[in-house]
Length: 270
Ligand code: ADE
Image (cartoon, rainbow, N blue to C red; front, top):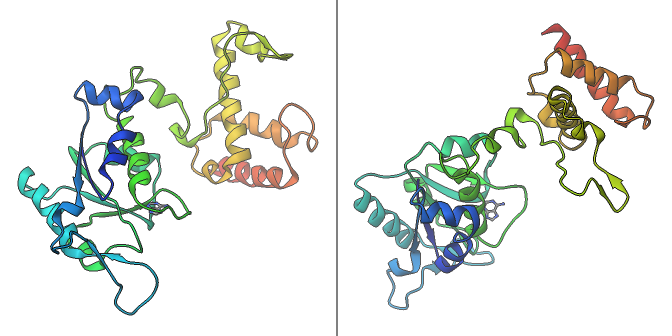
C-alpha cells in the first residue's frame, strides 16, 4: 500500500506515522508514505495558497489551483489518477468495512483541508471519496488521515504479526470485543473470571461470545441489528432478557429488555 498525503503540515504526518506497528510496516516495505506539501504548488509570489471566500464570511479558503497542481504532479508521476479521499466532517462516516475496502487499493491519496475548506471546484475535479471520522469538527484533515491510514494498514496482509487478531477483535462480525485479562490472577482484590482459568476451551469461547453480545447491546445496540445470531446466541440473549431488571450477572435496563424482545422476535421469524 502506498499512501500519499496532500497537506500544509507534512511534518505532522511524518512524525505521527513513524512509530509502532505502522512504523515497523513501513520499515519492512509493506507500506510507503509520501507527503506532498501543497504550499510548494502556490501560484502566487508570496507563496500563499488561501484567499477570502466569495460571498463573504469568516475565515479563508484553500484555492483550487495549488491543490489541483499537487494532485496532477502526483498522477503524472504514477501514470494514472489514483483514488483521492478528501477528509471532511461532511463525508461518509468511516467504519471498519470502509477500511477493508480501501485496503484493496494499491495507492491512496488523502487531501487534508484547513481553514474554512477548499474551493469546491477542485474537489469536483479530483476527489473520489468524501470521508468523515466522526460527528465532531477538527482543525484540519491531518489527524483524520492518520486515523484512516492506521486502520487501513491493519487490513494490509503482513502488517499485523498475528493475522488472527484482525479477525476476532471489535467489529469482526459487527460485535465489540470481549474483555481481556492477564497476570496476576487477583489484582487489588479483583479476580479474573474463573471460566478463563478452567482450561475448557468451549466454555471460554462461549463466555467470550456472550461478553461480546452483552457489550454490544450495552454500548452499541445499533450494531446488533446486523449481527448473525445462532441458536446459542439467542438462548443467551433470551436469558439476559428474562432476568429481573438490574439483577444477575448481565444487568440490563427496561429499555434494553424491550429492544432485545423485539430483536429476538424478529430473529425467530427469519
Ligand atoms: N476535518 C475536520 N473535521 C473532520 C472530521 N470529523 N472528519 C474528517 N475530516 C475532518
